[in-house]
Length: 191
Image 1: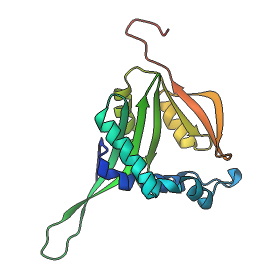
Image 2: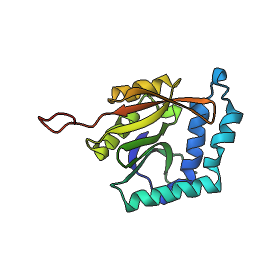
Image 3: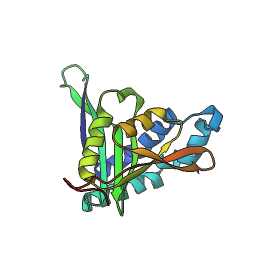
Image 4: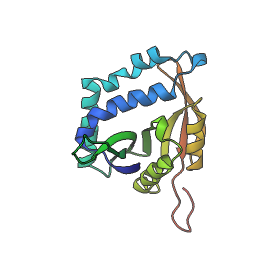
């Protein structure tokens, strides 16, 4: 199976909303925080509705119009599907991950998700390398769920540190802020 990372296209919007919901259902259930499938569907289920898909389409179209300000990459899993007798094999392309961001005074990373069945193959590192290249030396920030220890370790490995800022998203999901300081010019110091 091959995995390709490429810019999202407007037609991908219909798959990104459901992907986001599926990733949330895989990632965030947490009994102690009171987060279960019902809570996730209540608070993130809209991403898979016509309205959520339209928001994705708008974002993707804006990213294609202004790639210096908006970043959106998808990971496609390519596999050959068996064909009926006498027909040639068909390539099936499923979206299994996404990373988006935007440039303002700082670069904001998010969302970033990979489905469980493709984790551990270096795809997150490949996505992050493309994002860091796009962001250049800018200061970056993101929110990460506190109990998502794998994600916290991943971001630390890529130069992000927790700031101590916290938020309780929708009154339950405990998030912490992480930042990656701006790269200093060669031979210079941060300001």
